[in-house]
Length: 298
Ligand code: NDP
Image 1 (cartoon, helix red, strand yellow):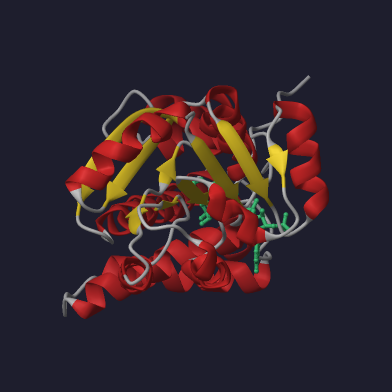
Image 2: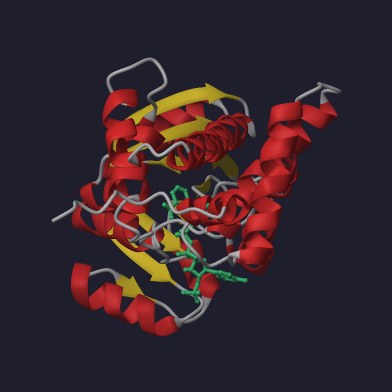
């Protein structure tokens, strides 16, 4: 019998990820807004269902939802229909503690859980080249690997349940810290009369460079485009998760705390639905300048 997979949550990331699955496997899709599931079925040949419990027919069930709260709600709704041996693969950038509770709930029904958050953004999801960091039992990981590979460039098994979410939260915290740091550096240079486009050219062949300085600032900030691909609200959520992990371990992490506060401020002032790079606008408002290339004279 051919492998059946299901995908719950056809958002920015889930829609193309489920598309890659549908090219290789029989794929059931469910989305809160059903029209998106229908569009997916039209585009990729998946099967759209209107009752989430119908996803329980699949051997592998994927979720890619905003937070672990929505994931738990989906597990609760489908639990009585799940068959023993089903593997629930959560690609949400979730909370490790919450995931451990969800895994326990599934275990009670003879099902397995993997946290498998992804990195690579909308472009990586569309290209099928996402980096996937997986937490869970080794045997379950091995079983799920061939399906995960449908949308992945690189897949890492990083530890027990929750470890994938922990690695993802820290990765995104590094993204958050970088965005703030590069913005503060560049508004300072603009005040000093330096063209930020020229400053970035220098930094990007020097030791201060990062993915944020090499890609985000040239493509999203200097252009003033801030295209909405990954929301500021979701990055603020990831920062909060990273801080909560550090707090539980009683670790002093001042930089992580500060970055989280700045993102909370940005969420209120700039808006949760803006692109995450729009945090730069908050730093610009404090400085009273914009990080935009200098206009050429003449
Ligand atoms: P989107 O906001 O684009 O999509 C969210 C999805 O969740 C939609 O399908 C939405 O349904 C569904 N949803 C929201 N609330 C509920 C609910 N209460 N019940 C059921 N379904 C719900 O998010 P993204 O795709 O951007 O992000 C998804 C996850 O992936 C997040 O955890 C995010 O942090 C992570 N991520 C995002 C990246 C990005 O670049 N965007 C990169 C890497 C990870 P509906 O269509 O009805 O609104």
